[in-house]
Length: 205
Image (cartoon, rainbow, N blue to C red; front, side, top):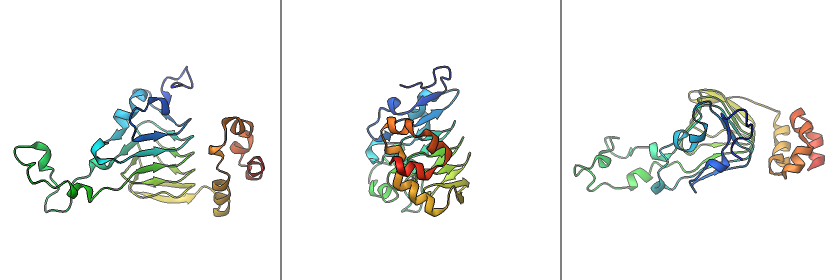
């Protein structure tokens, strides 16, 4: 379904909305936007040009607040010369002798968001960033580098503020990986997931 909460059309599950084969979004990941929730692919994934080949890969059970943006590799300008101005795109003969490898040299690779990630309102994720499972990105943050699993980051550029849990608990959560379970098992163990009962989750696994 697209609208999992029919009385709130601003909330959409993203998986059925995505057309591009270079965007992979897991089940139950949603976007909340009062004005343009259905236009997520067009408005929130920026500079995603097919010829560059980069992907946006998002896991299951992620929550994206209004205005979250993913800036893809197409936003990068060549930085191997004396100017970053993109002369070639305006033609006028300026496209002659342009070397595409000057663009490829700056590509950052795929952008990957793990499972159970919460990204706050107006946050911007830059090209090639990897955000670990269970992480939280504060509102209006600009994420320019990888985020560890279960880390809370914020600011411009985003910095790690703290881990949500002690490192040993993070390791156990990553091993349990409840987000990969069948939905029936997840539903049966919501009390443990919501209540922080790691022992119960490990038994259920």
